[in-house]
Amino acid sequence: MTTNAPTIDQLIEPVGQCLTPEVAERLIALRANHELQEHVDLLADKANRGELSEEERQQYEQYVSFSQFMTLLQIEARNVLDAAGRH
Image 1 (cartoon, helix red, strand yellow):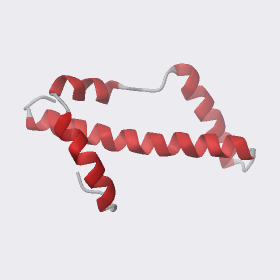
Image 2 (cartoon, rainbow, N blue to C red):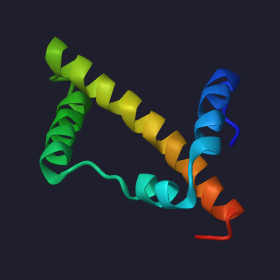
Image 3 (cartoon, rainbow, N blue to C red):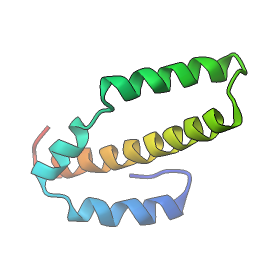
């Protein structure tokens, strides 16, 4: 995996080396539960309208950061599955 931030690659790649194909599959399958996704969607709508309170803004930014991190982990997990010949 290659991002614009070499430091992030340096953090993510060792995690990928620890993943078994089974763990990689479970990591790829992870999704927010329905209740959390509805809440995040509400925050996103409010953010688009410029209506977030400071607390909501912090909450939304944390979710976006975590979501981006999970995306990078899932990319690394897919690389593990590709290397194992599993898709």
